[in-house]
Length: 291
Ligand SMILES: NC(=O)c1ccc[n+]([C@@H]2O[C@H](COP(=O)([O-])OP(=O)(O)OC[C@H]3O[C@@H](n4cnc5c(N)ncnc54)[C@H](OP(=O)(O)O)[C@@H]3O)[C@@H](O)[C@H]2O)c1
Image (cartoon, rainbow, N blue to C red; front, side, top):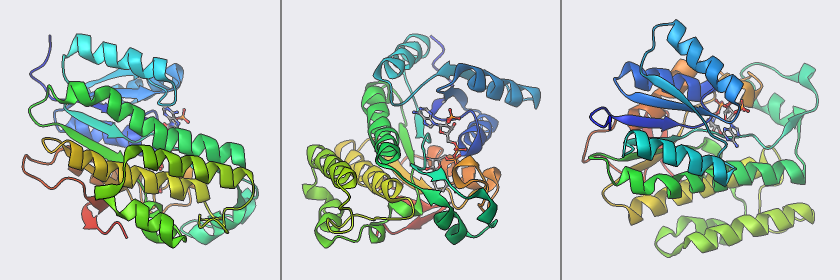
């Protein structure tokens, strides 16, 4: 079993910030399991890295919304390495579609908010992937992270995951109150968001009702889940991070930062030394408030 080297899994790594996180981790001597839901896109991403001299990277298929795919990756990592040191939950979707691409202005998020449309189906997919997918990955890999001397989980979140993006006082209160927030209750909140979304009563129920509403809810849930994990697994270092406003497909390339800049925060958290803070939220490489 090849278990002397530190092993990382990066999800959604065929492009964007995930691909760059993989490159930077590998540059730091980590053996990266670069994963992608599409085999062809994933293999092409690995080749792209290998072509520029990156050696410490291997590919494995992973769709974080498919339990069988997660199990297959888990068996692979268990058999090959017997442990996992770093889990970077980067895969995510915006939960929107672009309606008017011609009105987009680079660096102007308002122009993006005005150009998108979001349906119930997109919102459901967004919660399923961003929240439930991230959670399923953590649950699957916690036993292998226990086999590491310095386990790290990095959940790539967003500034939209701050509590200020949840208008309803009582929902915000529940999400903030980590000592009393059970995982089951977090799931109930996600389910009620989806019901309210389907029935067209997001605003009355205290949910964000425009400009990436499901995305805001999903990333708030990721942040709350990160804090629950940090509390439940004191030997792990578990943090969440907004990479900044990055030029990728998710922002329809309106972002102001490069992927190199966006990957810095997640990579810093993946490589935190023992004794570092856990259960924190970072904006790029700086600590920030959950509020
Ligand atoms: N860009 C920003 O400004 C920004 C800001 C805040 C937070 N973030 C967060 O940063 C992370 C990376 O986003 P990005 O900007 O790099 O976006 P991106 O270029 O669109 O990349 C998203 C990645 O996630 C993958 N993915 C989506 N659903 C998946 C699933 N079910 N299973 C596995 N992989 C899946 C995509 O795969 P496919 O190619 O197959 O679709 C793609 O590889 C996301 O969590 C996002 O919310 C980004």
